Length: 194
Image (tube, rainbow, N blue to C red; front, top):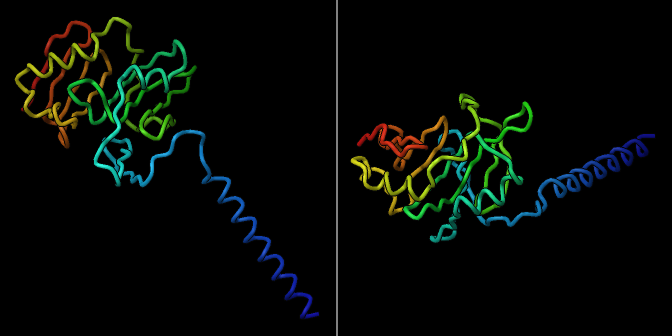
C-alpha cells in the first residue's frame, strides 16, 4: 500500500510540473508584435519606460506613425504623451489616453508595438483633444525659440511632451519644474521655467 501511494504522488508531482511548463510557455510566447530584445522597465512619470539595453541607436516614431498603429480609425484621445522627443517631433514612445464608452485606458506605441495600460492614478480624464490644435512641428518651433528652451534638450531627444486640457507641456530630462507650457490652439506661451 505504501508503494502505491508513493507512485501516485510521483505521478501527481510530474503532472503538475508538466502543467506548469505548459502554462509558462503559453503566457510567455510571442504576442504577434515585434519584440524588443533585452528590455528593462524603469518607471518614469507613472508610466514604465522601455529602454533597449544592447543598442546605442534608439528607434523613434512620428506622431502620425503612432496614431495609425495605436488608434482605431477615427478614434479620438484626451491625453497625449511623447517620451524622448527630439526636435524633429519623433519620440521613442507615444502614449494616448483613450475613452471607449465609459472606460478610459492608455494605448502605448513604442519599439515593442502596441500595448494597453490602465489609466495611472491621478490622471484626469479630460475632454477629447479637439481637431484644431497646432501641429507638433509648430509647437516644437515655438518651444525651441522660447526663453526656457535650454532646459528641454530637444536636440538630444530627451524631452517629454504632454498634451492635455488644451495645453502642450514640454519638459527636459528628469525635471518637472523646468519646461514650457503652450496653449495648444493659439500657440501662446503660457509659462517658461528654467
